[in-house]
Every structure is written in C-alpha cells, then in structure tokens.
Amino acid sequence: MSNPLRDARDRRLNRIAGPGALVFFGITGDLARKKLMPAVYDLASRGLLPPNFAIVGFGRRDWSAEDFAAQAREWILASSRTPFNETVFTQLASGMRFISGAFDDDAAYEQLSATLDELAETRSTGRNHAFYLSIPPSWFDVVCEKLSEHKLANDANPGWERVVIEKPFGHDLASARELNAIVESVFPPDSVFRIDHYLGKETVQNLLALRFGNQMFEPLWNNKYVDHVQITMAEDIGIGGRASYYDGVGAARDVIQNHLLQLLALTAMEEPISFNADHLRSEKEKVLAAVQLPEDLGAASARGQYTSGWQGGEEVVGFLDEEGFNPKSKTETYAAVRLNINTRRWSGVPFYLRAGKRLGRRVTEIAVVFKKAPNLLFTDHKDDEFGQNAFVIRVQPDEGATIRFSSKVPGTQMEIRDVTMDFGYGNAFTESSPEAYERLILDVLLGEPPLFPRHEEVEQSWRILDPFEEYWAALPTQPEPYAPGSWGPASSDELMAKDGRTWRRP
Ligand code: BG6
Image 1 (tube, rainbow, N blue to C red):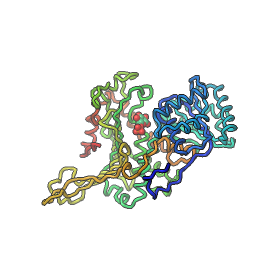
Image 2: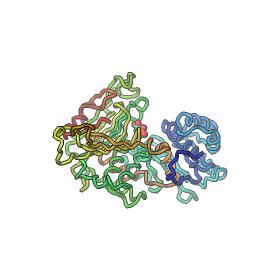
Image 3: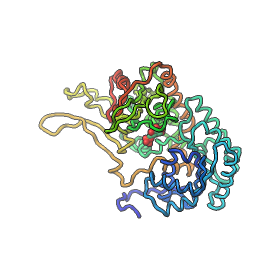
Image 4: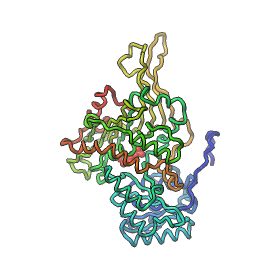
C-alpha cells in the first residue's frame, strides 16, 4: 500500500537488483546474523530483489538448506527493519542453499560450484555471483585462491563475479598492500567491493547533498571561515564478547582508520566532477593524500581504556576484566588524533577525530566550527564560545543537522545568546532510512561502486594511522583509564586545551 503521507515530490525510481546469487562466507558470524541476512530480507520485502534470487550460506555447520532457512528466519525475526511477512520469507527461503565445509576444503568448493550450476538452472541466476567474505581477514587469501582454483572467479563465465570484503582491510599499510595484491590478483579491481558501512548511512551520503547541492555552505567551507572540525564517534557499549577481534586492534584501527577518515574525506574533499565512482573516489584519495602528520605525535593524540563503574544505572566491568582479554592489554578503547590537511582550502584548520567505547552516549557527528566574527560588538561575551557558529551534521542517532548562531533574547535590552536551528530527518521525511547494509548490498548487486573505498583510499588511511600506532606501541604505559559514561580520558581534553579549544558535548 502506498504511504498516504508521502511527499508528492517524491518520485524516486526504485533501483531493483537483477537475477543473481549472493554467497555468504561466514554466514554464522555475528555480522551475518544481525545485519546481513536481515538486510537481504528487508531488500526482498521492499521488492528490490527479483523473486528468484538465491542465497548460499557457506560455513562449518552441518546444516541442510532447510536448517539454514530455519536459522535465517530467526535472525530476520530478531533484527529486520521491515515487518515479517510469511510470503516474502517463503519466496526468499526457496532460493536458500547451504554448503557445509571449512574455508580451505576443496570438496566444499566443488559442492559450491555444483550448487551455483543448479541455481543457474532452477532460479535463472544468469551465473551472476557475489561472494561476500564476512570472515577473519586471515582467510581472505585462502578463499580467493580457492574460488579461483575452482573457476568461480572466472572472467570467462557468462555472468558477473564480484567479491565483497569487510574491514579490517589489513592491520597496517604493509598488510593492507599484501591483502589488496591477493584479492586483486583474483578479482579485477572493479569487481572488488570493500565495505565501510558508514558510507551506506543516509546521513553520510547527505553530506554530499548538503555540500554540493546548496550554495550557502561551500563559500564558507575553508580556512578563511572555519576554525576547526571535530569528528566524533561515541558509543555507549563496551567490548564484551569481541575480545578475539578487538584485542590488539583498538579504537583507532577499528573505526578511525576507516569510518572516521572516510567522514573526514567527505567533509574536506573538493567537489567531484560527478558522483561517478572514479570521480568521487579520486577526490577522497586526493584529500587523504594531503593529510599531514603532526610532528609531535604524542601532543597530537590521546588514548584511553575504560575502567569498571556504572553506566546507565548498570554496573559494568572494565575493559581489562572483559572476558578473553589479556589483563595487561595495551589495546585502547578510546583514541583521539589531530590532523592537518595540506591544501590551500584547509591549511591551518585542524581536524580533530575521536572515537571511544563506553562513553556518555551513542552519537556520531561532524561539527564544523567557525571562527568568530572579527569585531564582536557584544562585549559581555568576549571570552566565551558565544558567536562561534557551528554546523553540525548528526550521523546518528536523530539523523539531521544543526546550525548554531547568535540571537537576541526577547526583552527590552540587547541581550544576545547562542541558539540552534535544527533539521531532523524524522520531521522532514515520512520514510525511515534504510539500514546501511541494505543500501550497500543492493549496490553490490547492481554493480555500482561509488560508496566502496578503492584500495588507494585504504592505503592512504593506513599511511595516516601507522605512525600513531607505532608511537603508541612504543610507549611503556597503558592507555589512560577513563570512567564508563564519561567523555574519555583527561589527556583527550588536554589535547584540545593546548590548542585553546574544547570538545563539544554532543
Ligand atoms: C564497526 C566497529 O565497524 O562499527 C564496531 O567494528 C562498532 O566496533 C560499529 O561498534 C559501530 O557501527 P554503528 O553502525 O552502530 O555506528
């Protein structure tokens, strides 16, 4: 049924995937259960997948196709965005198959090959295959090589083959290069889709719309008017249950190397000639390549580890007591860095990036903080933040944007105060945003790569992060403790204070 509240100007054409099969390696993992399978169901329930679409799970469990479908039903019921519809699910489940085996098991790949043949016959997939590697990166090379040996990554096939890889794309620049070389030796670069799920978020794409679809922001978007930029990714959750992934990785590798540097690139890049993948990605690459590392890495960074304490009325354990962690682990759960961008537009404007677990609340935002007017007539306010305009893009939650500016307080005297003007997605549009994975999986199936970082971007991001990681690794001390529910370690506030600035309290 159509939405009676839908804006009459909303004439979007639905983008619908063509026939194909999506093969999930690591189907029983957390990501596949909580995000990927529900996202595929949501696409199906929105009518964006063809009726004969096929899904193949590949994993160690000894499951039949029916067992797989029964599990998928539970995952979808628990986490899909759209209401469960039996007809949609039955249709989707009729195209589900399961291959039981280890990632290096030749017999399992033979079975996969036979299953894809069968699906080409029975579900007219056209031999279009997307291989989604939701597996530890140490297996990427094995799976790619096996797919190649079993002629499943073969340009000579009549359909298309694409490979989707999840972060982490390596552990540092050297390992990222190795990984890229392996993957791209099997799949041509334009068939490799690297997922950074932040790029699938509606508000992140809206950054492009705000910057390049309007006239009023861009003239101010430079070092003449901008004082600094703060990019924050705060989470209230801890690491519980993810020790095997997180220990030795830490906040900077986990999210700054990818999500936050992508946000920086979209905020700071020049206008692309078009939104075509090559144009967009080259602009991001250019600005990442212009990121200049501070000389004093210690003064330009901070890191912390959350302690035990109370958060949201609950007692929570400290990072070092979380199950599976080495009690002497030096892995950080909070990281902040200051970066400069060496371009005519941004020279002299610091970009501060921070990310942490168990912080005050879950919020991701980009705050562009402007310089004060050169001559402030309102003398009462000379020393505080008054008059420091800010444009804040709230990535999540409460997706939207806010502008802070000064206004007269009603009354008979000239009293001035800062106020905010708010745009909220929830108020402006009648439809909720799709989950990032819906958008990204659909793009993979349609073969549209603009939202997937190219390997040069990944390598540039490691070039930026590696020196900080090396600096931190050489420190004899543990990261600084901070209380759960706080806004990170004191050294992070000092990093800003040294520059005469403060972090926003989102
Ligand atoms: C992932 C990180 O990439 O993003 C996690 O590995 C983090 O540590 C997650 O919790 C956050 O994603 P979102 O979409 O909830 O902001």
